[in-house]
Amino acid sequence: MANNLINYIKWRGDLSFRERAFNEIDALILCQISYLEFDGILDSGLKSTYTISSLWKAFKSDRKFKKRCDLGVLINPDTFHVLEAAAESTRFADIRPALYVNKIDLASEEQFSAVTYFLTKKNRDPIVVFRGTDDTIVGWKEDFNMSFSEAVPAQRDAVSYLENVASLSRGTVSAAGHSKGGNLALYAAAFENSKVKRRLKTVYNFDGPGFPEKFFDSTQFHQIKKHVQTYYPESSLVGMLFSHDDKFTVVKSENSGAWQHDAVSWVIDGKGFVTADKLDKNSISFNKTFNSWIKSVEPENLEIFTKTVFGAIETTGASTNSELGSNLFDNFKKILKALKGVDRKSRDEVIKMGMLLFATAKDNFRK
Image (cartoon, rainbow, N blue to C red):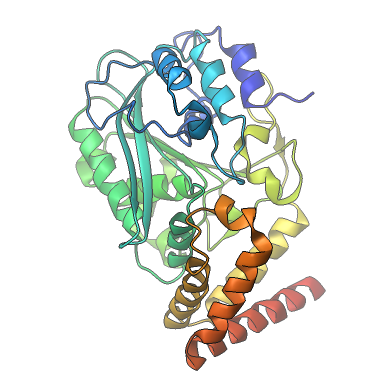
């Protein structure tokens, strides 16, 4: 069987960071652990007494253990085993997590979570990890809001968080994230102040959605470009949303299709990720289709589309994708009923953009 994140920890977990320097796979492991809910265990302070080892002990003995392990339909259910394997390894056991933040704000349509890791006991060389989109509906709505907003709340909070970590620590500063977390890591690094930029070591972007084209032409991005490491699975879909930089590494996965977004499935050997020469044709086609569609739609119409669709979803009463899918047939009927009840302009805009997306996909498929 191919080596994934858990197997990597068991295989290389006996090597300290002095014996083998922190690398991109280690960063991805911390990103996967960040999907777990540590509310009530970790706090937002710098002086955390926890290590990865003691964090696992507190996590597994918590009365809400099963609930904490249930991350919804889109995040690998073995994520808690990643934490378990890390806690039992020499390599990760003594890493200290601190400055934990987990924020859901329905009013501002924000889902934001971050945690900082220190490889040594001193507050040096922090590695800031931003959580990707979780199971919440509001988290997914915020992702859609990226299509028409200059900056969504999570992006602005990511900048503030990274600058705060830098002010409380010494040495270099790194940032990492999987999925939306990768987008936040890249955005925060680009828009942090110049003092923090001078301390920047590495930005790890694991299949994070992109940005408007102008972002990659900006001075802010070019100031950090040499520090950025971006990784996409062969069948990347999330990472192909919006525009992205041409410099990236393609990673093989044990999964197929859209499920390759699951970082636990990415294939690893002793030296690093097992790579492919290029993205597969489905990923390339999706990138062309989606971004052609985005460019053809005015931002105000994208906003109408997003508000209308998610407004209809909200009528189901579901707050997570898991809740939405648990009674999909009835919820789908509620969504259709809600769409029929919206004003004609909004309904027509949803239909028009749906047809435009279909037509764009058909054109790109022919090409």
